[in-house]
Image (cartoon, rainbow, N blue to C red):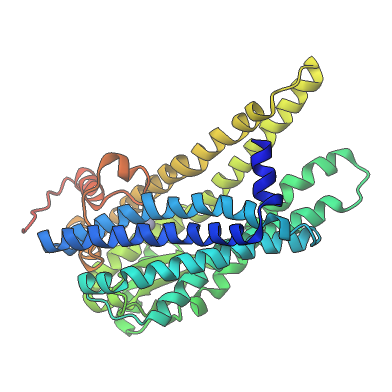
Length: 403
Ligand SMILES: [Zn+2]
């Protein structure tokens, strides 16, 4: 195994390195061709955009995304030798720049492969340039904070500190503080990132502001952002301290004012219960847990004089954390969604309006309302069918589906 890694990192000739990297990219393109054919076939057979989009989502989430992660790992090994000549911060920068370029090559290529099919099924008109820009922005938003947190943590570790306690706290405190700082700063850029403008329509603004008053929450800034070309119906709230509410103009155009109010009442629920802060605390608690487990293992080794096997140690640290941060976090998210729906009903949204608002959201996005149980566990939101059932349960109202 060691010989293999040695070869992969150091000895392999450059031409082979380049060929293998191109192969890694090619594998991702090949998978997208397969996905395109499969989704096109389903659409041809059923004529249902919902079903086709659901299949595409499943492929994206469980095949293409995972394939990208799997192919990035050998890539990082194969380019590692070029990093050794940089200092530590330069090394981090390059270790992030390489996956960024790789992910851009893979995702822009995949976009070119699937774009026509996607546009045909959903009837979207978004330009290629805008789509590529969105891909670049979303990867930067993921990779840049990782780079910043990594670099600052390294620098913080090298500060000369006498106190042993402080010395052991800094490596865990720095990333946690940075997570909060980034989450405080990022919302400032959201209006620009989304190209948002202040919400138009005096009456709608009044209607929504009344909702905030009713909930006992300070009126936030209301924005709308352009999504008609990509046909994305959505509403979101960002900001830990000074919240901002965004509604996509594609939804504004297609929904009734009372439906928009219902969706915003749900967002107010997130604000009222401080869901954004709680999500961060959940993640921080996970990081703290890893740190504590590491501390306990060290204590065990010192106390008993026995050494814990390296792989066992890593497994003890990482396996529970990975479950906690994936399935656990998603379950936590879905629970918050349920509570936000409940809140909307509590401040007076009629159950039938809430349900039609959700169904409209699904229809506009060509989203299926029902999900398989296992699939649902990997989603941030419960399926529409589950949310509707929950609303019916709380309110005692029975929705009549007009099919
Ligand atoms: Zn929500």
